[in-house]
Image 1 (cartoon, one colour):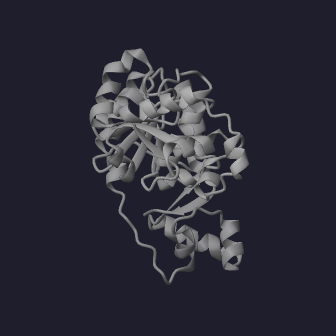
Image 2 (image 1 turned 90 degrees about the vertical axis):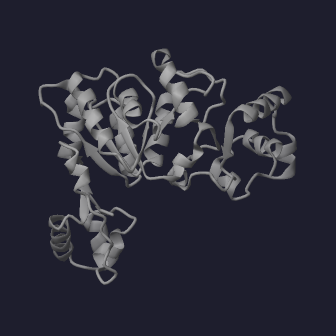
Length: 315
């Protein structure tokens, strides 16, 4: 499929990435009548000469994005696209980071020696995460790649575009605006393997991203803080609800990959999926008490993690 047909399909009202990938592009008449502005197509083709375009129909489109109900039809990329295929840790937090938050972000990035760090390029925790993990870092932009934001971090973001990776699902000439940042956050949640919240109020964008990652079955971590600090209210609530607390780099360095025992039905059921005890009981046709007993044994052994009542295998 060439770019013109791809963008023509994208122009069909209601068409999403899942349908495009499955070849459900509508009939020929709907494509012929699709409102495809020739000037816009020319602009897209010009952008494709400056940026790498990864379309949902391409072989290198990240598989993790198919977890989303509405995955992006394309990603505009600048830098090392190969970073998308490596293990990824998301680090998110407050734009108004405290000195404590900055110091903890530095500790977290120091513990990510074998991981790529993904964040949103915003002031505060995000930029500190990119700095600490450079060049093994991915910045997901709210606007287009020609409209990097914030201006205060322009130099670092340009360096990431040369040696790390900048990505956006928006056309490169799209200016950043408030409504695009929640859309950006879902990409961070989908692309990561684990996510850690450094600081943030319980209503912050960081908590929204964490909840999106939780819904996708990702491993959630949080840095605990004083109950008197508003910036600690978000992470503290996550820990209360089952997120793993991060207090020092050894918390991650102590993690050991566990291979599920194929003879253990609970381990097999949790391999690649998170589940509540009730869901496991129904799936295995075991009494709930028996499931809870086995989950307790696995948790004590450090083989499962629990977040918001859902158990997942700790690989």
